Length: 180
Image 1: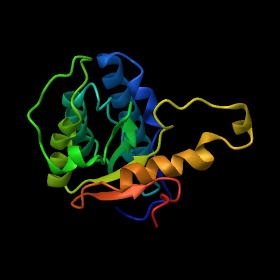
Image 2: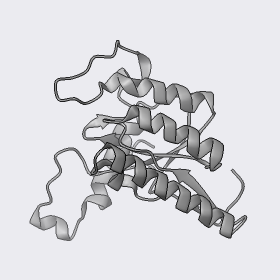
Image 3: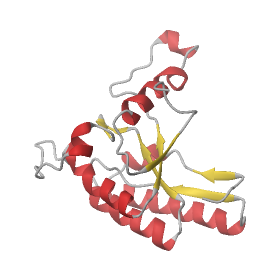
């Protein structure tokens, strides 16, 4: 990626709270907006593409990877550390590709992230990992002086980064993780 003054990476946690089409539309709208900012300010901005919710819409996420990288010329993609407790770097999702089994809760199985990793690897895509609050996080009164991002985001990033595939280049947000 060329040296740019700023790279756009929207906090895309909003792409997981809507229905299927809403998530897809929000991700697409953010990506098209970011691409336009780059066009309006050549050489100044780049962007990492947002994807719909990987946990519930792997197909839509793969389609958005194709659109964002091929049509919008995104510099990479932005993924959250986990999607409702489904961590990107869990060994099960990286090292093996289990047969696809639809869970009773309707969510994709953890190993189903494999097609995404294979596609990102095939394209030599840079991936920005952005932390999210830990699964089940509930603020406590003392945290008004010590908010979640101050400590928990580093732990979330470490949980994910410790098992990411070697074949994909990563940018880890907020000065990295606790592992090094």
